[in-house]
Length: 188
Image 1 (tube, helix red, strand yellow):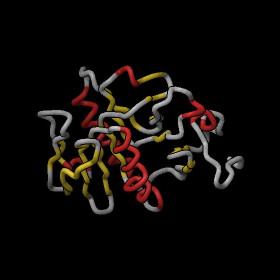
Image 2 (cartoon, rainbow, N blue to C red):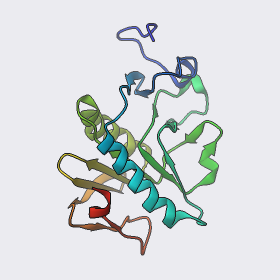
Image 3 (cartoon, rainbow, N blue to C red):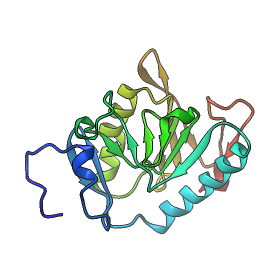
């Protein structure tokens, strides 16, 4: 991807032309390469959460999607005007009108990011936090494999409010799903 120029902004239209061998995200027009692949621990956590949510959601209107899965966050439908495309580790979408053959157009109901070492942790905790908040993601989880905890943020009056920080010994009940609990000792 040698065509990326410093200080240039990019759109989803540009993204669609890029080499598919590398994974990319664009936040406010700035591209971020997502390679190398995540750690084994990262993938284990994503797998366990996918199993837990997938089992609960079977036969329900909400659907769960794992990376790679493009989430386009924009108020425009035009590819050349969409300057935010992210690939959350897990996305739960309850409004099927947001789904198309290329992924999700609009905010998922729940987004889960599992931290990786390096710059992705800063991006998940700052850039993506602000992006998900501004586009109306109802619930955002940041999973920290190293510290074995999960920060849960809920959208209240257009701003994220921290619900709690959960550790390995805790059980989480996602706010958007009543009666569903995840035991974190199963995840970590």
